[in-house]
Image (cartoon, rainbow, N blue to C red; front, side):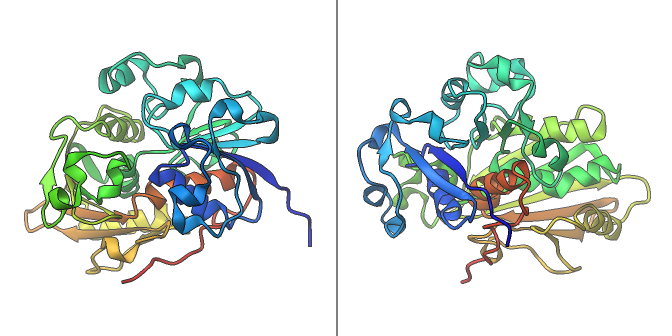
Length: 349
């Protein structure tokens, strides 16, 4: 058997949910050696103290970025909050490959970033070279990238369902309504009143109405696919569950296209994508059927309104919507099998 190269990895933001899931997945990757775990607020603590479910792993204790020997790192997974990642990434040696799970390098236009994220970008020189990390749609670019910007969880679910349809002119780009729901882990691990159990449990509430930061990301990628500006109506909701994301997209069919044609187009688009499953007619995607996995399930349904269809997509927001997709991109960047360390099936019930 050929010797497999060991790739030394650092995880920035190791005390957050995405960082924890990245560690959980990467710990079983045969080519990854985690050499640094960075969590400024928990520096000096063992990982088991922050995440007892990872206590069985033999990993270094949490440190600040200044304490890391960057000569012992080949790739950095970044799970830092939006607006803070670009400053840390800009300081890294350029030989280190970076897979960023924040929003800091997803938007291609600096003006759009400043508008939606409240200030000028801290590392504009890196934006142009960043590759948007939606694995299934940008494989070739990801393979040769130094910096990959993993999509947000909502854009991942939405774009996998709609990008091939917009690109193929199967649906109208100017009439898309997206109703999205996410588990509470999507809000991060910081203490916030609206995600306390007694506030979020047994209830369902919209947020970011008309102003959610994932909107420009969705419009950017759908616009690139269609070759023209695309505007979407997007409303997210906080659902009383820990993991999972469900996006229901209402679209207008183009010409004589049918819902069956949409299913055919999606099936063709993902024929070689191991983690995207286009459901059989009548089968409804559900978050509990992808939980804990890197899969995306997509279902297509004819609307009772003539000339319209409904496209439903489901993912685990922490896996396919973040850490799993990051590891999938890591595999591509290092010439490895795309599915390596991501083979686990969904956890049900």
